[in-house]
Amino acid sequence: DAKTTQPTSMDCAEGRAANLPCNHSTISGNEYVYWYRQIHSQGPQYIIHGLKNNETNEMASLIITEDRKSSTLILPHATLRDTAVYYCIATGGVSGNTPLVFGKGTRLSVIA
Amino acid sequence: DTGVSQDPRHKITKRGQNVTFRCDPISEHNRLYWYRQTLGQGPEFLTYFQNEAQLEKSRLLSDRFSAERPKGSFSTLEIQRTEQGDSAMYLCASRRDSMSDTQYFGPGTRLTVL
Image (cartoon, rainbow over all chains, first blue to last red; front, side, top):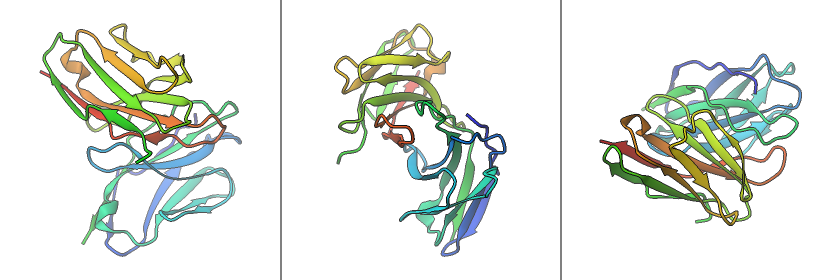
């Protein structure tokens, strides 16, 4: 799996958009970009994933650069409940059965 | 609730005791994963099953650890002769058998070894 790098921590004002960057410069052509988040003492929660195109669901938007070397997770209107550690993972490959490799993620603090 | 469930949610044990955790995956998910997470770190892969077959083990899975999925449904993770270093959150995840399908995690079992 390609290695990803994320900022250690970020702050965001409640109600504003939270933009969480991720670099994955060694990503291969068939690897997906996945985002999970983990609220304190809970299991990781799936947010969104994408391969090449930008994606949007009820939780967030994922913007992937054209060269696929980086991506941004956007939480459009952050709330206090979005305070969590956010993990960006590049995975999948040909077989699609590789375990997820988590880094330390970005600790997002949403401030009232 | 049709999500991944884990039991127990919390376990406190004394060093040297054996413990067993259970994971019930989402129905029809034939791949099941176990991860371990220590304080301040992201989850680390331990092992995974496709149906009842254990297909991969991490080097983190010492010989004191054993996992089973006898009927291809629920799975158990046993730790024998627990050590204080085994204290961690043990997470289970499941997914369907397709190339890009997502892993869904359970709430985890927090183990404290005294």
